[in-house]
Length: 274
Image (cartoon, rainbow, N blue to C red):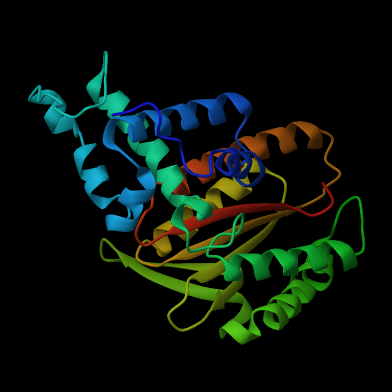
């Protein structure tokens, strides 16, 4: 395939990964290079997105552990040296990320998951940053009164026209392996025919963030989800190390959410007074 093909929205894609996915420069370069190699091998990704949202392309890049055991050959146009299984998995991961990129989809406003929905959630979060009383740390009662309660009001105001209604401490139930599990969301928003919105509010501790991400994902595998991890300050002695660890898990959560192509799931991190 000709090297003259130019990746659509390349700079916007890089900025999106940096600003909204928290990827470092090395990861961004690798992801872009992988997507460009796919496009050079298979042709215009813009055309393939219009055709079937990369469905046939993902099929051509499939390579399972069974394929590896059977030593199945890859017959596609990509030049692959070395481990087929890991290399094709890397290309699929890059393509999933590009498919989640709003400008690539041509359906969503740049920078906001699910277009107008994500934009209005962003506005509500920024309103909270502007009005919330800034403190070095928050007691549990203050979290509810100063963070959760006003944010729910802002969300209901901003997304009212889209049919959303938000509530706090919503209980979810799932049956798995003959066992019933329950969970409780800090903030939960839903509207008919639209993605559910889950916002979890915690201090910036990676273990809290990671635990909730895994739980909320498992409860909503069959739904479109906009997940927001909102973190607020604490006065722990090792708070700087906690922040760095939290940022690492934000990046890991972004990678995890990018795996889902249908139904789509998007992860957003938001720092209150970082």
